[in-house]
Length: 114
Image (cartoon, rainbow, N blue to C red; front, top):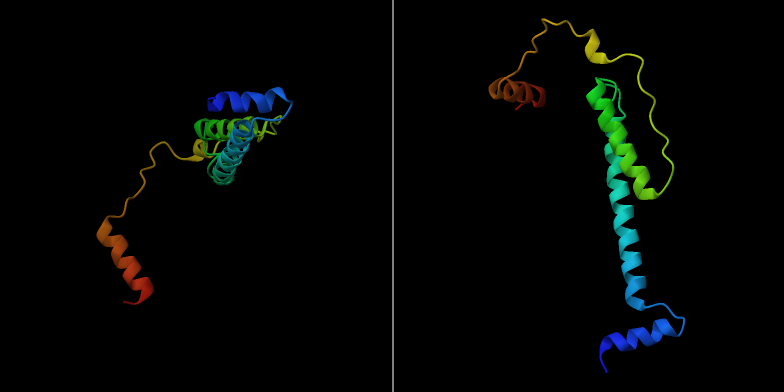
């Protein structure tokens, strides 16, 4: 008698195949873990300066929310689109200054007094 017929007997008697139960629990656990990770990303993306910076960043938030609610099997409660984008207020000729590694190291050294 092979192992498959043993499991078939359990299922044919109206019981649940223990392998199926294990797989369902494992899959549920993995889905919950994935949802928790995505929720963490949503929390970051929802911060002022992220989702409302420009349409791309807002779209990233909506994509994360879509993935989250899909994993949960729920209807989505999506973040409302901002009335204006933060990058619309940045002057077109703005050039950000970039500190080099030496400057950053000196600031850290000064701040920590060593």
